[in-house]
Length: 154
Image 1 (cartoon, one colour):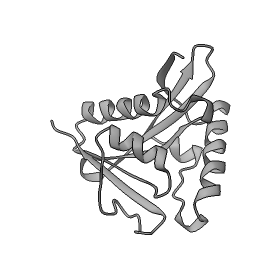
Image 2: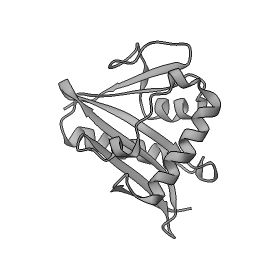
Image 3: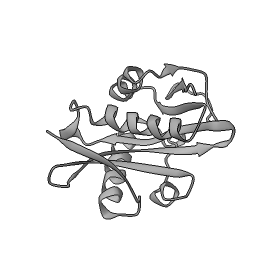
């Protein structure tokens, strides 16, 4: 299956549907106090860029954001690939677009927080060169959380 990836607004119905699916997925796996979700309104702010993957017919397959923080740090947020599109390279392709943008903007590193039991997501991050690390930004450590970082060279 071929797909394209483009920056989009988070306020579209398609993105809202993806966010709803992602939230339902994480609600089943992670207790509420350990979920660190962005709303679509937060995803639409100026410090965040959203990438959406779509199939040839225009149907959404997945999404991922980069949120910019101080000191040259970019954070991967709201990564999600619909179940029917998993295994097609969509997640890795979105992650690569996020990294490309971070490099273009001169960020020094990309970090992320994910569920410690999100094995498929962790594989995508590790294939993308991310390494497990200590807690990042202001996230508290927990048994439900895994942290990753990737330094970016100039």
